[in-house]
Length: 339
Ligand code: ADP
Ligand code: MG
Image 1 (cartoon, protein in one colour):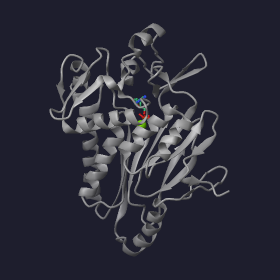
Image 2: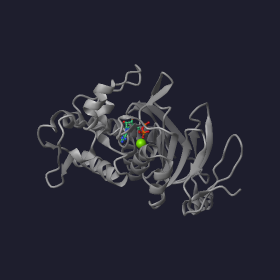
Image 3: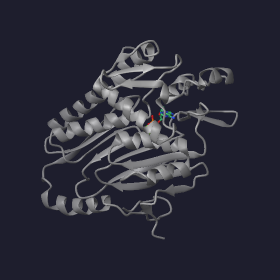
Image 4: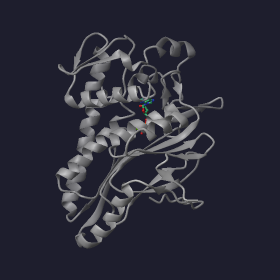
């Protein structure tokens, strides 16, 4: 894979099978692409961010209907998993699981189980109970907890206080201050669901993105998709990734933040301190599924470059691009610069 840098040109080759997938795509689609098909794209606000759908289809009306189905699917998931929607299943969990077992559906069970698996894999860097402290921050009105408030709630950040019962599909919190938030994983899950939905309707080339989480179905008619990595401290992209049939997520300290007395307070929290994770500006993860790229981009952001890259190297078919606090860029070892 050749990563393109719009500024200073450099090349970065991906040594794994996705490179071959790209070549097959080039040959295959030149031969078989239907002449009358075209790209149809639509955007809307869902899950607190911009959702974009691009579909290659022969029929504009059907493409429009499929986009509407994608947006409806996002809304359905938001209605269940948002902690801000009062009647959502997740709000019910945050309200009642401190007192009793709460029944949840298979879908919420799956996403919370996956979150707890990532907590184990990352030694607690990924932890949905960050919300026990996280809800004390308001990034829009530059509000942060006092050190007393922070100390009072910090011990409630502990994924081990979340107990799932697989047989009865229930959840219970062991700490009375526990709250959970799926902001680091639910958009990835939703993007995967939408890609599955499009596949079921016969679509073979599409993109679904929700903020920084994207998944690509197939290629762009014989060419790769080009997904930009934003400049964390300026306009435009620092590079573009040519990708085919993968998920890609970026977590950045510029998405939701405020500055106070020279300090940047952003939305990715280190569960050990209850304050914003330091030393990284952005992490981009490429994986097969968006639920994994989403959870891992947040995880590596918290773990830092060295531990984060070590984790990525231990996982099959996962790549990482890390922009450090000083702007230096680091790549997982499957991505190499030829010069
Ligand atoms: P976004 O696409 O919303 O910017 P990211 O994937 O970058 O999301 O993850 C940031 C979000 O993850 C936060 O807004 C918050 O909801 C959640 N989060 C923050 N810190 C953690 C953490 N340590 N573990 C799990 N989730 C977290
Ligand atoms: Mg994430």
